Amino acid sequence: MNTPTGEAAAGSGTRTAALRAMTTAHSAHNYHPLPVVIADGEGAWVRDVEGHRYLDMLAAYSAVNFGHRHPRLIAAAQRQLDRVTLVSRAFDHDQFGPFCAELATLAGMEMVLPMNTGAEAVETAIKTARKWGYQVKGVPADEAVIIAFEGNFHGRTTTIVSFSTDPLAREGFGPYTPGFRVVPYGDAAALAGAMDEKVVGVLVEPIQGEAGVIVPPPGYLGQVRELCDRYGALMMADEIQSGLGRTGTTFACEHENVVPDIYILGKALGGGIVPVSAVVSSAAILGVFQPGQHGSTFGGNPLGCAVGREVIALLATGEMQERSAKLGTHLHSRLSALPRQMVAQVRGRGLWAGVEFTAIGGREACERLARHGVLAKDTHGTTIRLAPPLIISEADLDWALDRIAEALS
Image (cartoon, rainbow, N blue to C red; front, side, top):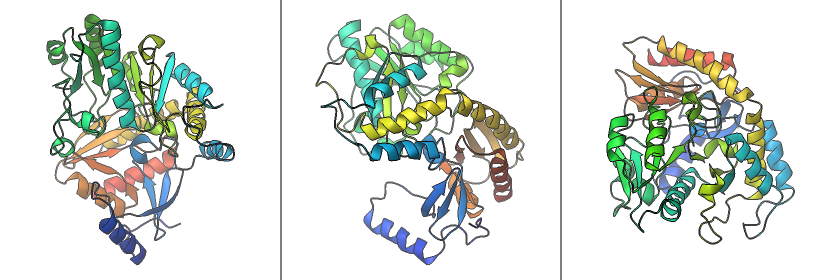
């Protein structure tokens, strides 16, 4: 497979044009993809329909943490495909109990409520906090409050966009769901000012991904934990993008030695093969649910659980987290050396970086990178996100960083 070169590499060719025209004509325009049509992938690399090869530096927003078609994950999926893929939660299956037990152990928790997508897991956490607030904390009916943060991204359901501060995600989708307060991210004093006895949960990203890989001030997560303890509220950590090895630890909260009451997980949990998400917590918190009060036909399905178990096994050794930490240090060192007239700021942890440019927009930067054989994603105007698979080699990482310097100079 050849590496793309020159202006014609990305978005060119008759097959690309035909497929993109079909997408434009028959798909709702809720995305604005780069002019690349992927046909296959392996490890950290993908290839388009014209045969051009690209290094994937996005990894599907961390859903492909272990690379495309990781052999152990594919083998786990194939074994389960030969057995049973779906029974619904009307019956148990032999992958469900082990998946829940192994994920609870990985997270240092007791109980798991599996769902499918990240947004479903966030909705589940919201319902959990509210029911816990009424049943355990004693908040009067329908008066529970959940605090979220400016710049948040937790999904795009009608409830979640009700507390979004992104006009694109929010405007035109009202009326909005009540019961939320939004405060500035990284400002402990603002959070303290919003807390009271009706607050049942604080929904926080340990690092804000969609906002541009925003790392909060040192000690901030510990302050969130202390305020939740003081007011008897649940600290709910959305680790859908930041968790499962992305930042050099299993969970990003570990960088501050903070343990939330609830982990919200997704993306990488499905190995880039099937959508798998989960809320992971204590028995005292998830024990508020009774049969019929929450559910999902596909949540915790045999195929998803089989793949998820292999993901957990890959993380259980700590090797992936160590790779992310080591290569992440290298990534940030090289990005920080880019000329200041080109790059205003580099943010992030582990194999996760937000690169903010001075003179060009993020979309233009990603289009240039695609022409040089590197795939990334823009966000918030002048920023791109880099999140390569954790299995990327140092040589491939350096190749991508060389292309970034060439493309953006």
